[in-house]
Length: 421
Image 1 (cartoon, helix red, strand yellow):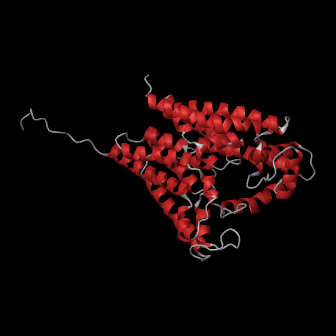
Image 2 (tube, rainbow, N blue to C red):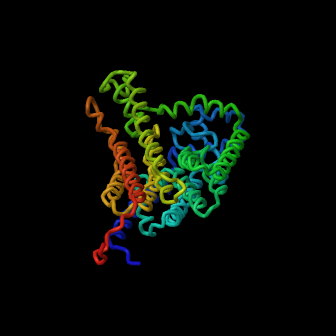
Image 3 (cartoon, rainbow, N blue to C red):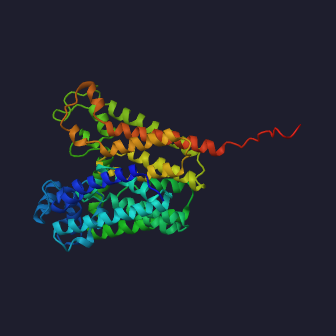
C-alpha cells in the first residue's frame, strides 16, 4: 500500500511533539494528576483508620506529600472506585510507579491504534494520524499520567467485542469503567435504545462488581459523601475555580456571563444570577433535541448507522461535560473515526470540516487563555475549544442526516434510449 508522503510527514511531526513534550518530561516528573490516582490506590490498600477522609482536601494533600507526591493533590471529583485503577503499582514508590504507568500508557496507545483500525477499518496510517492528531489531548495524557488512553482502549475493545457478536463481554468491558470514568455510559445509552439487553446485562453486572469492591474497601460513608456532595458539585461544574476558562464548558461560560464573584468574576457581562440556570437549560435542551431528533432517524440495527449514532452520542456527551480538560479530548478520536468510517464519502466538505475542527482542538494552547483578562463582551471569546466542539457536534449531525438520507433514497430507473416504448 502506497502511503502519501504528506501523511507520513504529518504523523512524524505529531509523534515528535508527543515524545518531546509528553514522554520525555513525564519520565522525570510526577505531578498532581498521577499523585491523585496513586495516593487513592495506596489508601484503599492501607489499614489507615482515617482513609474515609479521602474527600477532605487538606488531609488528602498531607497524605500525598508523605508518600512523595506533589503539593495540591486532591481526590475530588473522582468516584471512590477510581482507587482501583493503580492497585498493581502501589508496591512501588511514586516516581517508579509513574514511569511504569508511562510505559503502560504508550503500550495502550499502540493497542488503541490497532483496535481503531479493527473497529473502523480505516488504514493503519489514518488510525495513527487520528490518535496523534488529538495533539495536547494525547500529550497531556502521557505527561500527566492520566487514565484516558486506558479508557479509550476499553471503549474500543468493547465496540470490537460488539462487532464480533460477544455482547455480554462487550457490556462487561464498557460497564467496568462506568463507576470509574462516566464516559462509557454514553455508548451504553445507544445500546439501550438498540435494545441490546445482553450487552446491558453485562455492563450492569461488571459495574456493580466494581462498586461493591469500592464499598468493601472504603466503606459506605465515603460513597454517601460522593453521592450527596462530590457528585452534585461535579455535575454543576463547581471545581476549585468554577469560573476558570481552562474548563471550556457551558458551565464555566455561563458563570462568566451571568454570575458575579468578588475574586474570579467581579464584572460579569450580564449580572443576572438566574441567567445561569436558564442559559444552561436552554443549551442542554437544544442539544438534546438535536441529538434525539437525529437518533430517531437512524436504524441502530444497521452497523453503519450504529457507528454514526455512537459518534453523535459520545461527541454530545463531551460537549455537555461540566468541566473539560485537554486530556479528555483523546476520547474525541473515536467519534471522529466513526464519522469518517461510516459516513457517505460524497460529503467530502463536511468530513474535511470535522477533521479540521478536531485538529485545531488538539493544538489549542488553552493555558495561554488564563493569562488573558476577559472583561465585558470579550468573555465571549474566552471559550474557543467549546465553540469548536460545538461545531464538531453540529457537523456530525449534518453528516449523519445526509448519510442516512442518501441510504434511504430509492433508486430510480433510467429509461434505456435503445428500447422504443
